[in-house]
Figure 1 (cartoon, rainbow, N blue to C red):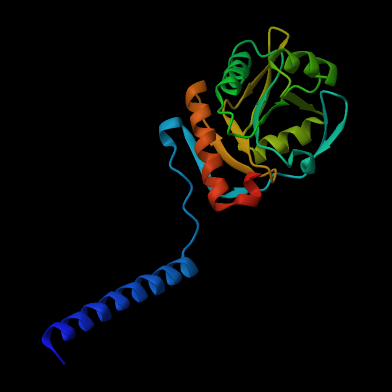
Figure 2: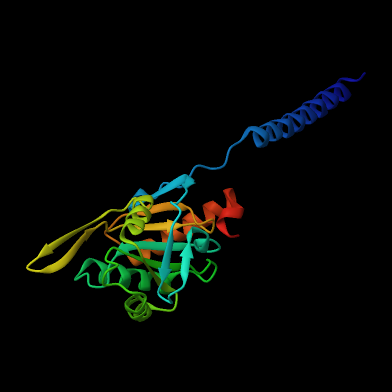
Length: 221
């Protein structure tokens, strides 16, 4: 065998071995590889769960007077905020931020809902919630019902609220974060204040794209 031919065969053998090794390596990696970890969005005050958390079971009433259960939150992404319509400052600002966020979302992203879970069901009737949420837009909704049920739902959203009376007026201290639910109706992320609409829109886009790649069924893709 000539020297040149021997070198050529050796080179071909090495090339074949390299290709085979890359192929096997890729197959092994794909077989044993796990989904990409949830994105680190701490710069947006956002924590994303690798494994979404199940919400507590509940039966409540929406702003249309219709009964809503946990199943009713499936099929779409939903930003949830625990507050109340008589809130003097935090709630109007939070809702306004969500309305602005909605306007900034890319057309390539799915349309989310925005849900106010009331912490004051005594005053926040369906009619009151309808008037309040309707001011912010068609994708804004509300939930009211039994106080204990609302507390349990808030708890599963990592939120709390406490009633207190000041000069004969009911005030409610409550969490200020947004909870983001995926289309499986599960808690996907928590977004802490301060809330910036541009950052909220960016965070949602990154969470959706990550979920689309790693959990396509749950992402609604």
